[in-house]
Length: 150
Image (cartoon, rainbow, N blue to C red; front, side, top):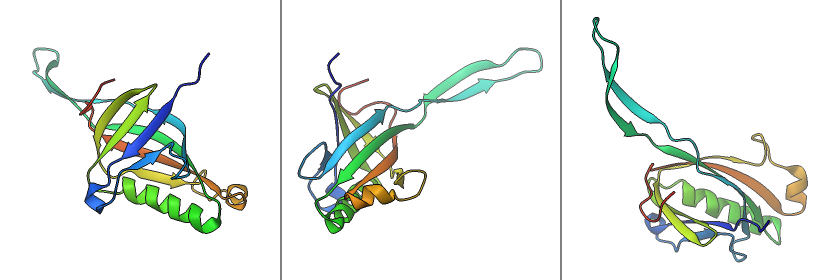
C-alpha cells in the first residue's frame, strides 16, 4: 500500500514573515501524525413539562486538530531556532493552517494552538543528543474549511 503524503503550512502574515511549511527540508520539520480531531455541536433544545426536549438549533463548534511534528537540526542551536519558529507560528491569535493530503489542499482558519514539546511534557534527552525533538500541536480551527474540504 502506498504511503499517505501529508504536509502542513502555517500563515505568518501577522508576524510579518513568510509562511512556514512542515515537510520542507529547509525547515527541518516532518509530519509524524495528523488527525482532523473531533467535531462537536452546540445544541439548543426547547423543553416543556408536557413534551420531550426538541432540538431547535445546532451549530458546529471549533475542531481541535492534532498535528505531531518531528523537528531536526544540524546543531542544538538550529534545532532550538526551528522549534521556536514552529511554536511562534502556531501561537498567533489568528492564522491560516493549510494541510495537504495526497495532493489535496485544505485550509482552515486557526486559533492559538496548545502544544507539548517532547513527550509527556518533558524534553526527550536522547532526541536532543541527536538534534531532534517532537512537538505535539492541538490546533483549534474552524469546523468548515476555508479552502478545499473534508
